[in-house]
Image 1 (cartoon, rainbow, N blue to C red):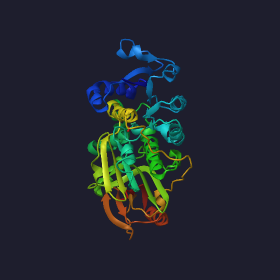
Image 2 (cartoon, protein in one colour):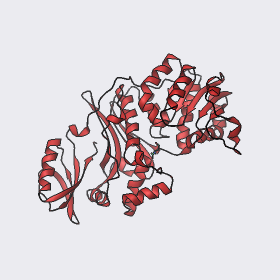
Image 3 (cartoon, protein in one colour):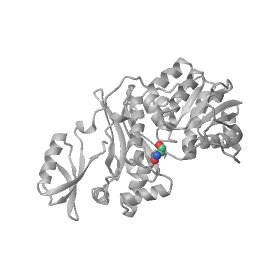
Image 4 (tube, rainbow, N blue to C red):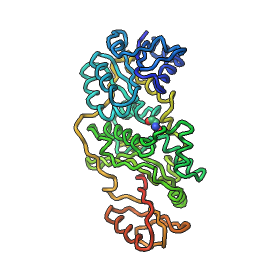
Length: 399
Ligand code: HSE
């Protein structure tokens, strides 16, 4: 029997215990052995829960237990998660984590520590929850040069935007609905302001780049300013607004952002609704590939963590997740290259050669531009502003 410890018995931690129990036969058949959670670290007690007899309150009990081979870190936050993970790696234990803040901030250092101690540090669940995107980049697509990654990386905001579109709800109404369903936290800032998606695209971008692209350097705009009129304007132009995390590389520079983006209705990403996530890649040999699935939720996220545990325990040797060096790569704003934009204004219509299409709406108009530079866009907005009020500007996704 192979022994595992879990740090944090919250949603994901209890999910990991459940997945290991429910998939017992499957795991035994594939791995040839049983995998059991023998200790769970939590500050709380769970009287009446079968987990109670495995609860420990002192991390040392896990660290000093030579039979525990894998430590699952699902407690979240940077500290003490960082200390527990580094100590586990130094003690020769594999680590699997779903903690995107930890991976984004310390991934480079923890990857080195794991290599030095001949163990694995894995974090599949930190990006797009249950979708196996990181391991795919590390294995099936290791030979590919990734030119572009574009993703719906946050389920809460995708749910809110879809609800606004489907029901005509305002942003505040849709947020309240998402909170009532338990999708959005009581403090929803990290989701709605794009910080959660920024951490995920920073991890993907760092993995592709091989250097550390920090999430605080990623130009990030959330969805709290999106109005019904914006959603209607996008629909009238034949598209949808989606919160996209994107990273593309050109001539050695990395263009990275998180922002509400105009997605044409016939694009696959436009069809990703509710809390689902999707990641699209453009790569050198394979061309376009897309991965779709649950980006959050107890069992989906825990499933990805358990996959990491099993990869670490697999008899083929230590599974090495490809991390990045701690050298900082400053990303470039995508608008530094020519882009297409959706512009919505209230007031008189403007004729302009940069407009590729324009639809009137009550009190104003929405338009899609041809490709233009930042300077051309500024001049266009100034011209519109002479007879109308520019209400919103969104980038159109790169295709
Ligand atoms: N809050 C995130 C989401 C899930 O809504 O997608 C955890 O990353």
